[in-house]
Image 1 (cartoon, rainbow, N blue to C red):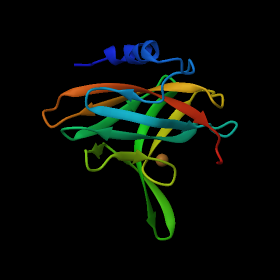
Image 2: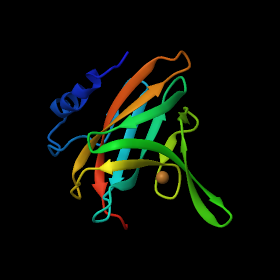
Image 3: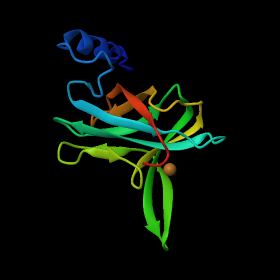
Length: 154
Ligand SMILES: [Cu+2]
């Protein structure tokens, strides 16, 4: 079953904020999964493929990240990065594990998100990422976070 009611979380957090800036919160929390620091690299002019990352931590039972979607791209893949014969190689994988002991870090130069068919993105803009997790019982849970569009270099 898809759980989309977490969409309302940011509004609740904003209402509860005490005089802070009226920007979207960087972290979206559910009971057991916290996603933060999501980003998508602005593709070079004329390109529609780019990378991105985020940080996921869980409390309690381990979770498996099985997929990501976004209105900002046609497709999002989960990629690993490894050195083979002196060359950096990317490979698509089905999922990434995340446990209390081992948070999931997707970043440039390591395991990452790969976006295909990327819509035009402005620097500093935020786009929604919808992450699908499963647990050991097969229960599916969706968490929505905001990814900041960042420059290619830096
Ligand atoms: Cu990749």
